[in-house]
Image (tube, rainbow, N blue to C red):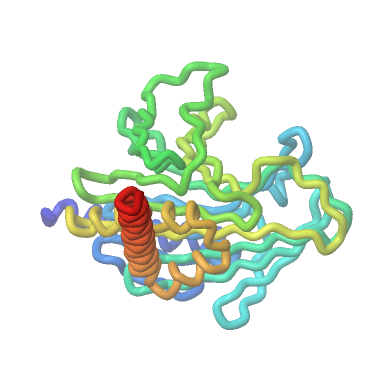
Length: 321
């Protein structure tokens, strides 16, 4: 890194911390991941700085008919929450009903995990719930993001420089998450989990359609309108892995593949989340795949033995004739 870039990055980080403080009033524990600085506000918003780039990740909630509530729909507008251990607790009074929310966070050695639970405190109707990155257009225009789809295919999505009215949607898939490249081998991978669906919904949008200044990459925790009575709830989690260098990019790929494998193996939401927090998702997926191959070999050997036995019996019978 050049001295000029370093100074620019320092100024950006200072501004980033000021912005985070203004939005969240106070910040929870923060952590450095190589060139990445990560912190969580007491509203539960994740702030990430990399050199001169500042981005945030947070929940978005839509009311019926994709209606918008200034207080509830945008997590950065939530009131600061109470903190106990590694969990934030808060309440929301919305025009589509009243909610309580919890957000657990783990700042791991090389990744961040956030888990959310939204619960109805009254009759509530929600169109959908998503977690999103807001990517500044001035920094990302003309670049691309990569969707990790449920078919196991990586789909590059171009963040088009030009604004085309009425065409806000850039991509829509189902899958496990997004990769946001920040350089040839530097970037951020985010994986999404939901307790109400196998694979999360993935969309990318151009927010200039609504007067915004960002592109978004979203992970949807549900796929149908939620009509809740008091006590009904939904849980979702995001796993954020900042990577620098080809080796860490390969690690990111393995972790995404392991989550894909565990979902297809029908491992429950809580099980996958636990493995990610403990750093054992890749190990468990590899163990299960080895066990599967071993069982296939056993079945193949048993089938071969049965065929041999049938042939022997047939030969003996023919000789007796």
